[in-house]
Image 1 (tube, helix red, strand yellow):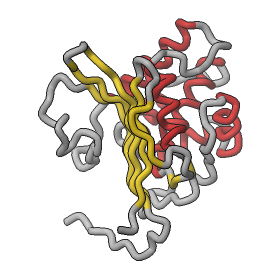
Image 2: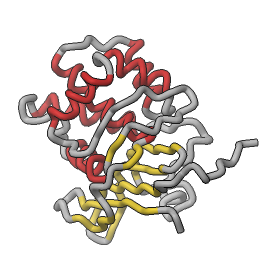
Image 3: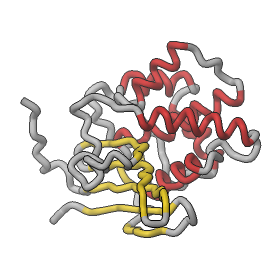
Image 4: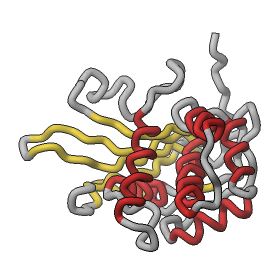
Length: 227
């Protein structure tokens, strides 16, 4: 009864908001913050302010499908640190609530980084329509970045990283469903954000789905240990 829900579902074909509950509430982002960090990386890469190496690619792959915290911190520093990365994100005008305050410790207990479900929905909308890095870059540059990000978001991670949009849902055994997403969990905040593409009587349809269950007074939550 103490848990609260923030959710937004958007039809990516026409921009219709299908579901919206507390879309602009500031939430502990947990690992979903790694999607905006990847966004900032792609901007810097396209601007030529960093030259991508095989080492960088490995860190990016570790950060997204495997949700590695050490690799995430490496990418933040590659971008110039927390303040610089935050500034890059603010300049995109995509984010309204995002706040990158702290590096993610190895145990994942990051409580200060903030985002909203609307922020995440907007980034997936721009990603789907291949306009992620904005009009100052060419259509082809936007297309390349969007495809690269979608490929990363589709890769499987560790078997024990449960995908909350698909695992155990009606999508789980449906092989026609395509999913690009990122999960996030920290004590008091449990979320998933992504794009689901499904077959319908009217053809293939894509939706951005961002869902967070959160609790303000999270100190009384008892975490189960994995045996």
